[in-house]
Image 1 (cartoon, rainbow, N blue to C red):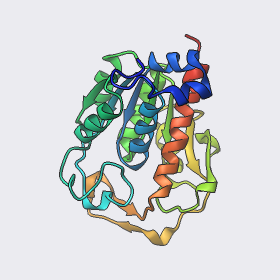
Image 2: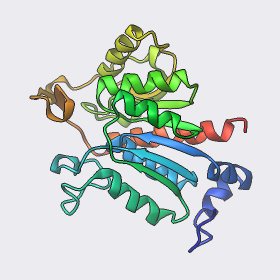
Image 3: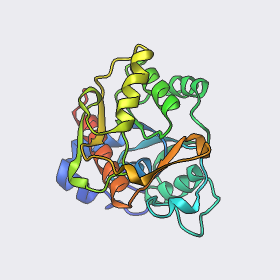
Image 4: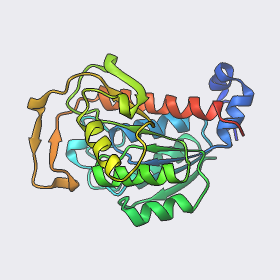
Length: 246
């Protein structure tokens, strides 16, 4: 699966990681839930790196406030479904990609159906609402599906503070703290790997909302932070897939 139109598409990747590892990535199926700032960058990097099959999930449409940090957000795409914009973009990057698209909000029952509908070699949690995120992680662990979860990239500005590690070791991240509390109530182990930042959040950048898009508050963001988080997420996926036993 080197690309029907241009067989040399993945040549540079193969030069770096080798033919065997590239071939392995082309046989892998990755599930990505959440196609916002972090998830969008991650899914693009996975496809450009040669992952052969993807399932992507998102229910949102592009909003003007997305333009400062999301790849597919432009003035021309405002109001359009992110899932379908990503479908078009990813197929244009790799026409041979096996792509499954779900334009849906990841509620509990949908999570169960989604995870039981196919075999996934790895999953990415880029969900930005607490309860669906916790249930998704719980369901992944119950099925022993390897995954990485993104913590909060908002209210932070220094990419040098981004790390990959276990969620029970994370500091200075409100989302991680809330997730640990929620997961403990659900009886879920909190030793899985996450992408996070040790930078203290800028509290002044966070404001309360009236429940906009299932959120109680929103925080300021800057373009390079979700992009950098997405790079770390993609690295964790690729490194894990390459080192998996087939």
